[in-house]
Length: 151
Image 1 (cartoon, rainbow, N blue to C red):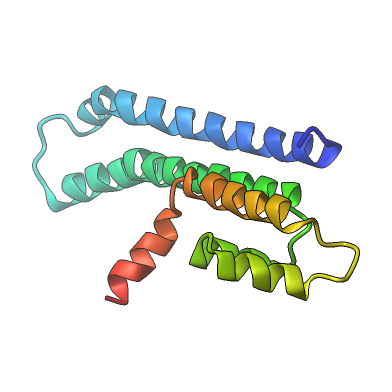
Image 2: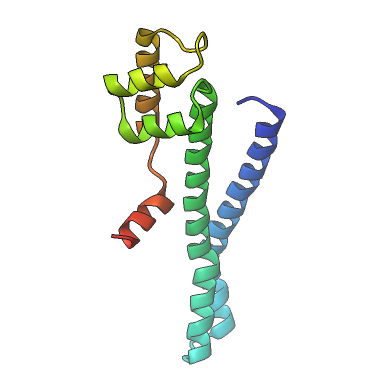
């Protein structure tokens, strides 16, 4: 993944990480400025201002951090898909959803164009490797949230 495109994406991700660091820094330092601004004044406006500062710094930095984790996971997934480009999208989806089985390997072998399919032993090893690599990647948080929400 050492292409110009990945380099450009790495630059974007680095900027997002910098933004997260700035938000975390602002979150750690606004307390003194907030106290100087509001003094000991107790009011609804003061409480709302403090809440908004917390949202703008801590919560936004946390959300950005989780999003960056998702981006990393998706990039890992794409790298696996590129490495095993021998499989079509539907075949790949079957491998990751069903896992390895002799039946799946046989069906994949039979569905591949004659001459392009590796021998059964090699194909079996490829299916196992794809499944193992895929399982080593953390699950996407967004998918977990949807699974929980949908019960």
